[in-house]
Amino acid sequence: MVDVTFYGAVSRIGGNKTLIEDSDTKIFLDFGINYSKEDLFFEFPLLRPSCKEDLFKLNLLPIIPGLYQNQGYYPIYKDDGTFSVAGESEQKQINAIFLSHAHMDHYGYFGLLRHDIPLYMSDITKKLIELREDVGSKNWNSNLENSDIKEIEKNKNLQINDFNINRYDVDHSILGASGYIIHINNITIAYTGDFRFHGYRKDLTEDFLSNLKNQHIDILITEGTRVTDKMEQDESTISSKSLETEQDVYEKCHEIVSNEDKLIIYDASYADLDRVRTLWKIAKKTGRKLVLDSKKAFILLYLNVENQLVKDIPQLGDFLIYLNRHKFNKRGKIYNGLTNGHDVYVESFEYYRQNHEAQLTVKQQINSKLKKKSKTLEEYQKQFNNPYLFEIDESNFIWGPHGREKILRNPNEYIVYTPNGMQTMLQIKPANQPINGTYIYGKAEPFKEEMILSFKRLQNWLRACNFKLEYAHTSGHVNRKRMGEFLEEVRPSKLFPIHTEQPKVFFEVGYKKTQEIILPEYGKKYSFKSN
Ligand SMILES: [Zn+2]
Image (tube, protein in one colour):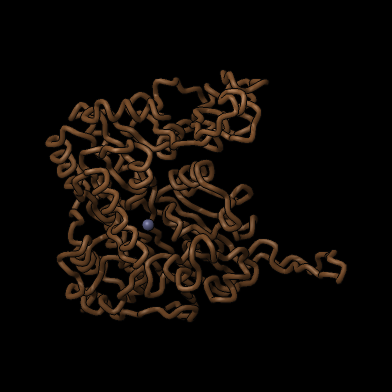
């Protein structure tokens, strides 16, 4: 008997947590944050959960024994305010977690899991997660410092008791995405993760598909983000602005940039490095310099330092690194000395920079005239736990008013690629004059109320800065039509649609392509007999 239980991504996009078990083995496929469900109760930044128990209260996280860290311990308080901790550790009950890709809605709660549960993923996903630890802020739910992160090679078998697990590469809007095929005795279960057939790496998805076709799939668990009711799609919405393929994004952006003699701002997620490749090629072709935000730059610079994981991505010298405006601390003696006691807003290049920005400016940290005692590169490598840390010359950075003036003086020489267009406009715009140019929206279409509000705000910024608005984006997900063809080719016995807001549409899309379409319910156990 094999049981499948869905603890997330049920009639929603994201939050995937699928438990697969037989009598002596339990694994999870993904363990992500369900943003849309959390938004029903919480509001950033004033009303937030601060421990896993807060999520238990609202069914936002399943209560499963032997899965979470420190589960079984509890504090006992005395009236005088002191306390002690009692209880005992639970026994580990989950054998492993398999991750499809490094988006938070798939792995955002890994930080809550026991450190003795191995977390399997592709080598690229592992590296991206490690780099994200450096560029992100560590919250109570996202610290993976002591987690047991393991690589699983592609097309290799991993045996856990009766479970035989195979990982395959697929194409998605983040590098390193995976699909899985799992054999448990004579039952075969396949999981697509998030996938598409229209990116630069569509051959990976094709290869996964041919593996699915080569065997009988008893149970297919598939995403269905874009499997929506066509009638509900309004031509005037931004979703209709989405382009078909990554190549289309290249062509459209190339045309826009070629016809613009002022500044180009491209606004897109910082995690999608294939999109960076697209803009990098365009910058080369149009003779502009590509300016990247510091997070993206850091990830690109350190992605391949250990092993050559990804080919054909820009290297140091191919782009300039934009350092966000960073306030010089007013409390210090140094500030008072430099400003003669006048209270003015001053920006800092290297002084007080934190985390990945401190690493990027390590050369400037070492040579800082503001620091009393300087450290060596080796000391910084130890401090940041980064043995590959290297020095970057000043000429590679854009920082401070003079850096931004350089852009304003010759706007036709730059493409500014940012994950936060409004923040970038705020920093670049001078008082009393606009910036002028074209702003290209390269993000997923706003589908939530807050996103629509934020989009209206964006339009105000574009007016204030005199930017034309253009769109150039393609989805990370397979479209409805291709999903129909995919199901026709795989012909699974049973189909569970998850990671979709409209699972019912699969009754149309999957019609006659499978024996049974099961719309999963949250927390319900579906049992399958081995033949
Ligand atoms: Zn994703």
